[in-house]
Every structure is written in structure tokens, then in C-alpha cells.
Image (cartoon, rainbow, N blue to C red; front, top):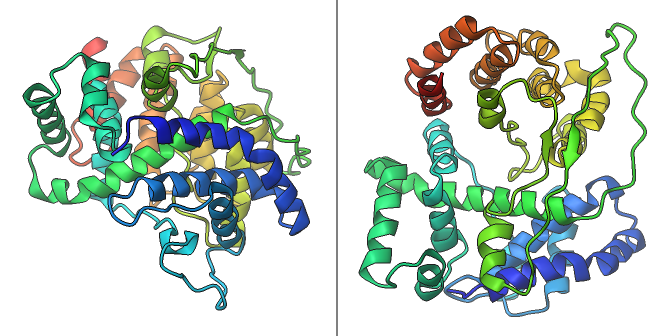
Length: 379
């Protein structure tokens, strides 16, 4: 358990270790495209390792980060001469989290859980002490807090034992994704990568980027405020404003998550897509769109990400064209249907949007079923 100090250390190390890490990357001639991603993944691995209730990692943070990053640069392969020694970094190599369809629905419910999401992340991923949680939420540290936690866990798992069994994996993935977004937001901007020339058979697309609003960060001296705000979304991320087509659409829109946020890519094509999605994750949809456009046919997920990027850049008509390009057997049809409904709202085609949302709301197991019902209630 922690009182927030480890979390403060994580954010401090993300800044303090970065120059030495970049020098280490250059010294070993590692490709720079994935350096920041591997740095953040390794830092999160260190954070999880020092929070373990049994045999936590006690060594130097930089040694942990470089050891684990070297594994990531080697596509997850551990050299045969580097055997774990008992409490070294390789003994705490982060394990990928794989969620089945039910686990994905649980993850979505967790992300839609509002205050419960924040409380569960603090308690079950960040392992915050009860006293710190109680002070932050103005609750009694014993029965009242315990009752709130039990109620939130039951609400997310719906009291289903099978969902409860999947809960540890889902909360771990949610915590990692949240930290990845936070570290990426606070990291300095990468060196720009020149966009490739447009493909000959692709129509040139002119999108209108929205203005970015930089929200002020909270004082790092307020430790508990940093925990609640900097990590779990109470500190707002960079958002796009200006020409949002409607309050409902703008409120409901959240970019589709990066499929490589926790599971590393396995092929050259996936690694290329991961590099492009780096810009997408940072909210730089213009660069991500331009990078992905010429090679879109190579990636099954491309029409979805191109459509979501177009939607974020306030071009819902173009977004719908991309969603329509997904084949009938695509695993991305369900999220595409949700974003297509949002695009219809953005185009002020309300009856069609309501029909699309109703189809989602009536589909058992649809990952956006709850979100569609909530949006329909507001229409």
C-alpha cells in the first residue's frame, strides 16, 4: 500500500530520467521511433513492481527502466545470458494483459463508471492506503469507505462471479492505459517525422484541425491532488474546442483506444501502425492521419482510426466514408457503428443518429450499448 509517494516518484522519474535514458538509447543504437513508448512502459513496470505486496522491487529505477526497455527493443525476447536473479528487473517483467470479449465489456463499464472508476483505480491499481482515500473523498476510513468500494466493485462487475474473476486484469489494463496517457501528455513533443507522400489512388483530404486548449496543471506540491487529478482524469487532458458540432456529440466523443496500449505489436506492419498511433495518442490527429493515409490498406484497423481522427478534426462526413470501408467481417465494426452514430449527430442528422444509437442499444453484448442508451436519453 502507498500514500501517494510512489506515484509522485513515477512522475518525477519521467522527467529526471529522460535525458539519461535518451543517451542510453543513442549509445546502444536503438531505434528512436519507439524510445519514448518503451520508456513509459518500463516506468510503469517499475511502478507496479515497487507496489507489489510481496517481494517488491527495491533496486534503482534507472536500472529497472533500461533493463526492461532493452527487452521491449528486442521485441520481448530476453537474452539467454540474462537470467532472473531473484529480485532484479527481469523478475518483474510486466506481463501483458489479454482480455476476451467479456473482459473488454468489463473494461468499458469501468471506464464509464465515473466516480467509481477513479475510486477503484486508486484503491485496486494504485494500492492507495485507506486513510489517504478517505481524506481525499471525505469519508470515514473504515466502514463508509469499505461500503463505497464494495458498491463500486459490484456495480462494475454486476455481481457476476465471472466478471469478478476478470476484474483484476481489467483494472490493471485500465490503470496502465491511464498512466500511459498521463506520461505521454506530460512528455516533451517528439521530433517531427516527415509525412509520406499521399498514395496515388487516394483522394487528397483537407481536414480542419481544431484549436487546442492547454489546461493548467495542478501544483505538484499537493501530493494528494496530484494523485487524484494528474493520474485519474480529474486533471483534464488536452482537448479540442472551437467548432464542435453539438454539445451531445462533443460530450460523448472519446477517441478509440490504441490497440497497442498494453499488448506490444508482433509484426513489422503492427510496429509501423504503433509508430503512427503515437501521434494519435497525443491528440495530434492531423499528423496521425497524414501518416496513416498512404498505407491504410495494410492495416485492418486503419479505416476506424482514420475515421475517428477525421471526426476529431471536425470532418464527420469524411469520417463516415472511412467507417463504411470496413469489411463485413471486421472486428472493428462495433466501435465503428458507435462513431458513425456520433458523426451523424455532428452532421445534424438526428433521426438517422437516433436509429443508429437505438440499434446499438438493442444489441446484446455491444461494447457501446450503455453509452448509446445514455446518449439516447439525452436526445
